Length: 178
Image 1 (cartoon, rainbow, N blue to C red):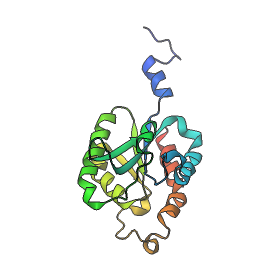
Image 2: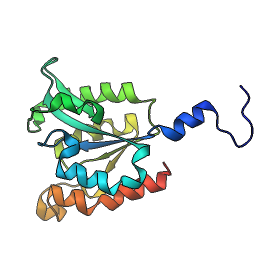
Image 3: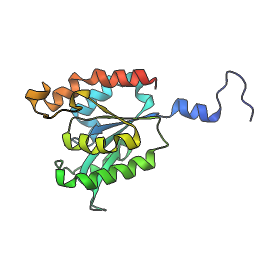
Image 4: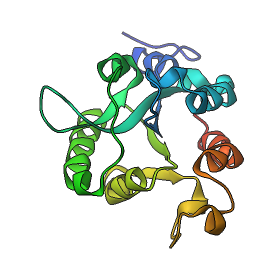
């Protein structure tokens, strides 16, 4: 098929209509994630560019079928974790990293950019282990190289950080022109 000047090829049309950014947010104790106040806050702030974004959670909940953490849970699959909850456990970090790696490997060709907007230390650590391998942009930057994640050291609670630094997330999406 010949594409005339000014017309998009099929692949270009697909890229124009499909999400090009994977945004990873932390799991929440409220399921589905998209109904939690923190996720709703982010979804509302990103309304102008939502068509370009697929949302997913990083979650340490043990998958009852595999006995391993879920890892990455796309919003389209969030019903799998409704009724389940676990606190992040540093002992599960190695298996969480492996599950996240496996899912990101499966998704590697689906997105132009992966951004993680994370305010849970265990999840930050898991994703920072994979950031170079999968070119993940970790935000908010206040947590980069932070020795302590305490409210005193950071200047806000984890929920406060989520709200206070959402501008960084918007700037990253805008600068990336997605």
